[in-house]
Length: 328
Image (cartoon, rainbow, N blue to C red):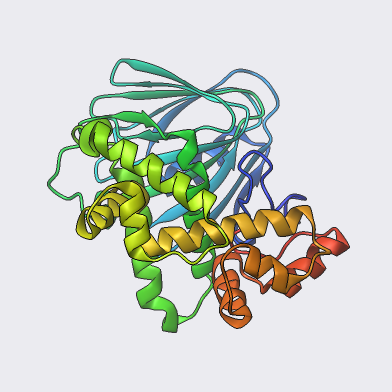
């Protein structure tokens, strides 16, 4: 049986249905739990605090990335071997973790996203009942082979969580597609890997720079204020105060995609939230409200992002069941 919620409430829009199709572990045994998870990620030390073990783990793998939902039930302290050729992205779905990475201690509360790339040592303490969504990213997938990660740990800015959620949902959806989507899947995996990796690179906080951060904020604000209006690439560049090539470099670095893809992604996210809040509304008006003047293209984009056309999603929402979406 799958978990009752395929939509995560901590990260709005995150739909975990594809992940729950592959249950790699369901156990109340300590040794069985350790063996299963060590075999997937890396060898590690595991200290239980004496509470009830209620371990569950699900996975979703693509050509280069792997996504896991994990819980132990009991409070645990984990001391993994130092990662050699990958880093991890942790989404705290339930409860939180405390992470000590290379001597730096970070509290990661529920609803936060944490990146870990330890060079010397790492220790994680999961609270009782903690559930994590963990993305394993090989350096090669992010084009980081041979590059030194300056930061061994980083919290992802909360403002970027919706964009990470969007990419994770697309990744899970593409894991179920056929070989005809191989090129698109490779593009999504590379964009996602680079999106998270850039927060661990030398001068990650400064890479975009203060001026770049301001440009990013202006860009996001402009898109949010112009959901229904026609917007061209030149409009985005002007709003950010950048040239087109500079704008592309900024969005590729900060969001892992081109400027116009970011525009469409944010509009789809807003339309999806609107549909969830009011599933009885007219779908043509919904599309127009978020800048999609062609209903057919809107349906296609929506299905690519969420796994179902708006009409089907609306039916699922009205019935009160789980949305069948990729990108909730």
